[in-house]
Length: 101
Image 1 (cartoon, helix red, strand yellow):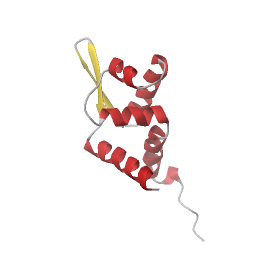
Image 2 (tube, helix red, strand yellow):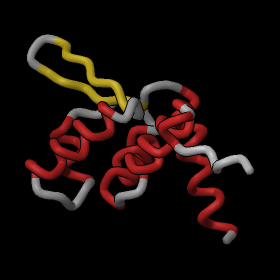
Image 3 (tube, rainbow, N blue to C red):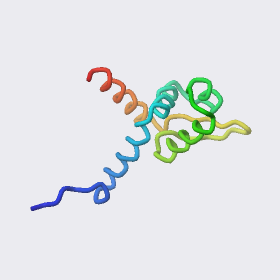
Image 4 (tube, one colour):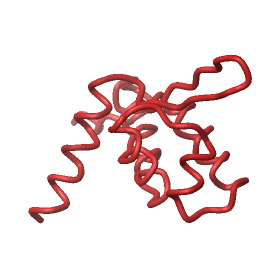
């Protein structure tokens, strides 16, 4: 009898778990939805996401570590954006799935 595969035996499963955890919190998903329209600063995100600034920073760090967003510094300003087009498609698909189930 074969044992069921574990996430640790399949790196792609581990990566999927990290990505899904990144999206599985309301404020993080809200940030991803906002970033579909383009780069935003932490201040712009704070205006739109009802979270304490410290919590927002934590969410952004979590999303960056999960590979869902990228951070770019330009002079004194920091901008966040979706990591790539595939991330935007993933967010769109999650929202589409949620709307039909």
